[in-house]
Length: 346
Image (cartoon, rainbow, N blue to C red; front, side, top):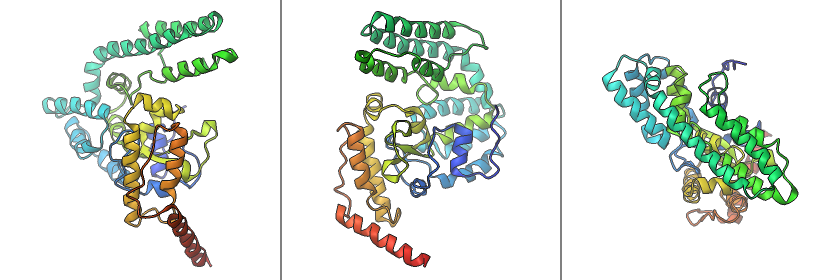
């Protein structure tokens, strides 16, 4: 089914329509975070593009017709881009210099064949790792798993446009396998390993293959939107994470999407610098609070410090030495704000 374009463009429906961000919740608890600027992504370490920039970008994008115009627009946001997006942008920049009046989709079409071969090798590497872990399972369970990975290999090697390998389809197929009680831990390791299958967020080759079928406008929008703000559950909603600001992070849309429901401990294995980025994120939040933002949520740094420690099993230890509020003072500031708000409503 084709998604209908929202009548009114907001930060929330922009992300959902154009980038298919995972569930962010219907609560308003994340709105105070979405309004912030100069926040460092806790997953990728880049500065997040504020949601207030979206409408202006979309207006400029509607006027871009050529490769040169698209590259000039994206140049303003290069500093915000993630590594994959920067790599793709560099390709576009070189292409636009030689073919200024051409289209960026044509650029991707030109290199798609070579990237597709490299992408298949990337996919095989992950499937090989999955098969290696299957040796720790019982023969019955291992055989069921091998049937899944074998089918994936057949699809990957096929040149049929009607039977395309989909990462999400493979992940869902693993849920059909019921491991024995003593195999559950290793099977969870297998599912987490399968999450490393390349996507357009993690692989330049996957990006080229996927977006070679899209129009220039969508390609440019994708490079931009990857670095815009998205509300992320620290404890995923699918495993009981609640919709409260103490369980929310403001992350880049790409960082949010790639994690999906991956345990934070596994995500750290994929991106070892996440603990460092989490500290930078917290420091940038603290700086915004000191500048008068996030009023009424002064306890937020203490809440996420505790939550991140729990969810990461001690791998993320946040320092709040730069924070001017003690935990008691932060709680008092929240009470004072709520009291003022109650008087205002009356």
